[in-house]
Length: 112
Length: 116
Image (cartoon, rainbow over all chains, first blue to last red; front, top):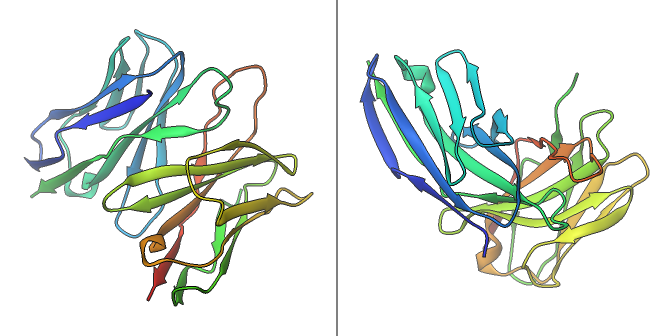
């Protein structure tokens, strides 16, 4: 069964304290791995898509990496405005079309 | 370019009633997917529509249904509402790429449904 597990469930950081969020997955034929950011009461906001092991993408203070079993979202020198829930999702092959399988998310709080 | 829009943003219904939610995708996007988000189960896939046809369905009862119109706008309907249907319902649109290529989905703000 396709599955996505995120850790930690919650993370508290001081402003400027870099860290990483983990997303481990079990899927039959990965078509893509996605990272989203979700603020309270809002819909998920797209951050990155990764397609194959070894791929990396960056955007401002965020960098996403992908291996055959997991993905990391590295946050460098975070600011309070980076506080949100970060969601990881995968698209599987085998005719799954656009079905996204989500992890439970990591709630990040960055304090000044 | 305008993002995904959903209406209404908030709904309060009572058990046994039915509800219809609406989603307008990003211009040019032909695929619309629906998700349910609850604190206990997280984000779960309901179904996907492409060119007015449902091409994928999640593990939800038949009370949950949807449709897509020729302009790619989509509606989802929940009949005989239960307390457990209280959730944030999210719509996501994408280009609808063919050939097995992964397709980025962009989410709307959601409709918050409360069932009393």
